[in-house]
Image (cartoon, rainbow, N blue to C red):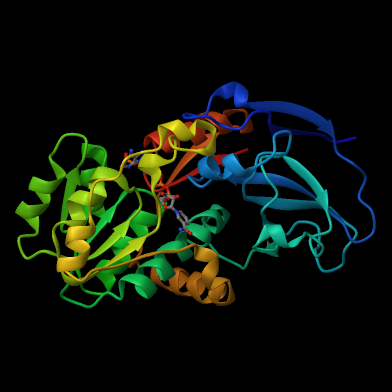
Length: 340
Ligand code: NDP
């Protein structure tokens, strides 16, 4: 008999997630019936969306999330034992399910990982998965970048931001990243080739940006929202484009659980009007029909040495919560993942 472990969301997060909002439980893994497979998690993803999405979840479900897992047992000929798969099946070490019958709420159906050769399978949770496609589609389709333009990326040392900045360099833009530490500033400039980095924790973002981009900003890829974004938006050029990808600076406040604590926004309308800016939010699943195009393009760029990937790996399923809250506070460089 196989004993698995999973995290149950016992309470919806209020403000900052607390350890006792989740409960780690053991369970007896059920037998595999016709059409089903038994998988064991190898890598699990911790992502910012888990924080705001928890507001919409009913307590007592398995905490949501994606993983790379290995098939241990199979009664489905299309899903052979030994293959590695991607699946959106939550914070659990083991699962038994029919991969062809997961309901629509799973958005990305489980799939057998393509052959990445020497690259780690965990990239299916990062550059060769959802965050990678967020960077690829969310930047090019919404910012419509042109060579020679100036782009600002916030959250620039994270999974999506570090990827967007590198695509922008590939496309010939001047790239400025906003991050929360000196180590991150150094990494994005020295290793990823960003032109400038701004540490929002130690510098006045408005002043620092006006020093490094006196020509103004044409594209802004926004991962964080709040004051940082206002400082950027007020320095944009006419007909600038803003891709609103994330708002991590606001995820811990203003949820339906503390509606009297809604954040006040700084005024951006004047810049929007007089600079005739275009601002558009998106969810990456808008491009679900082009999913493989993004993965293949990013894979090609990695192989050509044009995209550098980095992962912050937390060891041990028991450390999922630590990895999750650490990522929300900025302890990761590149993609935050957990190795079981
Ligand atoms: P990251 O790897 O970037 O990790 C989150 C980072 O956010 C931290 O490392 C931290 O870096 C930064 N951060 C935390 N708090 C703040 C704050 N108050 N102000 C500024 N930065 C902060 O995560 P992802 O790359 O996975 O996601 C980045 C953003 O993209 C998120 O907002 C996420 O919700 C969004 N997203 C949106 C998608 C979509 O479809 N629209 C899909 C995927 C992601 P630092 O040390 O620099 O503060």
